[in-house]
Length: 443
Image 1 (cartoon, rainbow, N blue to C red):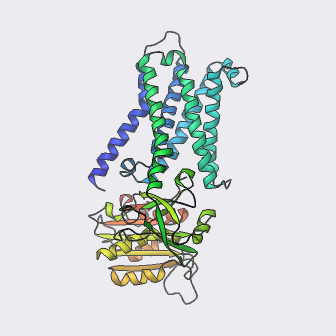
Image 2 (image 1 turned 90 degrees about the vertical axis):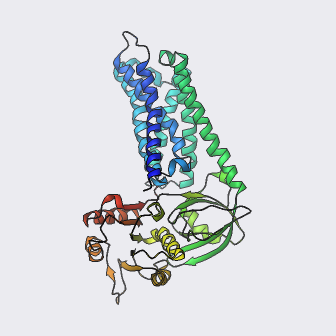
Image 3 (image 1 turned 30 degrees about the horizontal axis):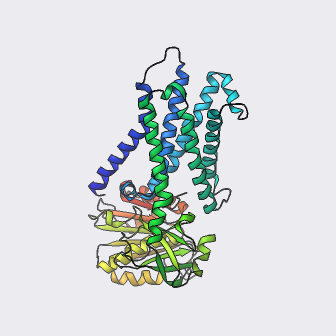
């Protein structure tokens, strides 16, 4: 990893920690009130930290490249999800501790008789419960992605103002001007972030559209769309990165989907995405026609060999449609005449629908690459590796030299497959710091 990314990562972590803990520090540093229960102070302190985290959640998902670059978008989104659960527990502990302190606080749950401050506070907590519940159970309940994303954004956008009003009318905890000033800053930060993500950024995407150039069917129910920028330069990307695409609607519709850019990074003003039919949106990809307008937001992602320029050897592992970022890496290496040794474990359930298998074999002739096809259910005359990719197969091809500190491993595929292969790589002796994965569980 480049030193610049490490330094920027440390700076962003420090700034985030400061913004999250500042409300707590100010509360502790403020004047003490004799006779006020310690449990009450603890309850308010946890709520303050939780709300500060929730206010910053919008920044984490605003796709600000300067923030995403040191960590990778998948890591930022994973952190967004996990810290969101932590914020929920902190905020939810606020009323629970109050009820433990004094049962008379329970009367504020009656929204018909309580004051506006408590009505909005209860409303904020209920919305927060809805946000976390939908995020955790979306896939189990088979809630459509677009529906979840729409209401996730609405609930969060309403919840923050309700909670801020509850705080601003919170008595002596923010009775001093400088305390009010802190939450005014958080309010402004929240408003600016929402304005940026919901208005300014969509407008920028609309001003820089892309046009479908070609739609091509591949093996395995995959369709490759080729796009070109319309009256603008497009963007540069590193092999392995991804972008969000909006088709049939405008960026204001909030109906975008992330896909890897499968083409070579050396191709100028042309981008390919190879998309497998796995849902409502992906099933419609084949209906796109040359000349159709789409909107592309990218590039994003940390999954790229270009982030590790000192790498001597590359071990690439792909499962199923996870082959798309690997193809971008291989195509880029071929166009650059990059002859570094490559060991490519190409895994699939069956041989016939293996996407890009012919091109992979052709690329083997242009690159210093050995390809190991590993098929779970191979044909009868199959002579390659069979079953799941495991430690035994990895050790068969990865000699001690390949397990040295100058080898970087890039792994992409279905989550269960990646989990199993990652464990096998570690068991084979490869350090965790050299194993890089691309996980598209962004929601």
